[in-house]
Image (cartoon, rainbow, N blue to C red; front, top):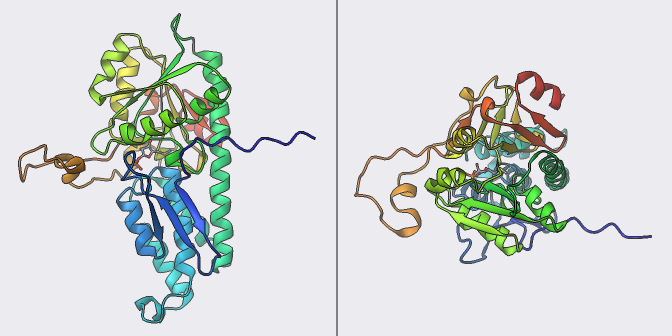
Length: 362
Ligand SMILES: CSC[C@H]1O[C@H](OP(=O)(O)O)[C@H](O)[C@@H]1O
C-alpha cells in the first residue's frame, strides 16, 4: 500500500521543538533575531526564558507565539529548583501565576491568550497533561496551515488570472510563514503548496520595517525552498502595483474581530488601501485560533507599541538623531471592507462581515 507522503515542510528548521520528558524537558527555539545570518537556537528552561523569547521576537508570529506559550506552561508546571522563589508556591499557584505572566509578553496576537486559556481549562495541570495538550496545539496548527494552503491555492487558481506571459504573482508583507507557525505558514502556505505541485508562481516580499521580518525571514525561507522571491522596500509597493506586476496580496493576521477587521503587522493597512486603488485582490490567511469573536470590530484590538531603538538603531546602525521622539505601533487594523476574502483551515470567507465570519466559525 502506498505510504502517504510526510507533510511537506520547507527546508528551514522548525522554529519550535520540545526536547525531553514532560517533567524535565525544555523548549528549543530557533532564534529568529539572528536570521538570516546565523541559525542559532535558544534552550528555554524557565518561564522567564519563554517570556523573553516572545517579547524579543526570538519566536514570533501569532500561531508560533501560542504554541510557544503552551510549551512554556509545561515548563511552569515542572518542579522548580529548591532555591527558586517559585518553590514556595503550590504547583497550582505556580501554574496560574505563570499563565498571567506569559499573558503580559505581547498584547496583540490573540493566539497567545487562546493557548493559555486552553491549557488553563484543562482539569489536570500536571506536566504530562499540559505537554500532551501543547503537542496537540502544535500538531493542529501544522494541519491548519496545510488546510489554509490548499483552500487558498484552490481559490486563487480558480479566481485569479495572472497577466499574460508571467506566473501568478503574489505580494506579501512581514512573515506569515513556516517561521511564524507550527507548519508551512498561513500566507505562505499556498506558495509552498504551489511550489510542491510545480505550479509557477512569483513572490514579491517587502522588507517590513522596522524589524524586517520580510527581508530577514520571508525572503530567507522562500529562497531556501527554491521559490522565486523578489525583495522590495516597503515604499515600493505602490509602484509595483501600478506597473501591474502584482496579481494578489496575501498576508497573515494576529487577531481578527467578529466583523472580519484584521490586525496584522504595521504597513498591512497601507497595502490594503493600495490594493483597493489598483483593483488587486487582498487576502488575509489565518487559522480559526486567530479570530477573537469577543470583539465586534477591529477598533477594540490592542495594538502593541514597541521600543524606540527598533526604529532608530535597527540592527545596530544609528539611523536617527539621539533622543528623537518616535512612535512605533507594531500592528495596524485593516477594515473588513478592504479584504477580498479571509482564508482559514475551514475554507474561504468572501467579503467578510459579522454574519459571514460568525457563520464560518460556528
Ligand atoms: C501567521 S501570523 C504572522 C503575523 O505575526 C507577525 O507579527 P510579529 O512578527 O510581530 O509576531 C506579522 O503580523 C505576521 O503577519
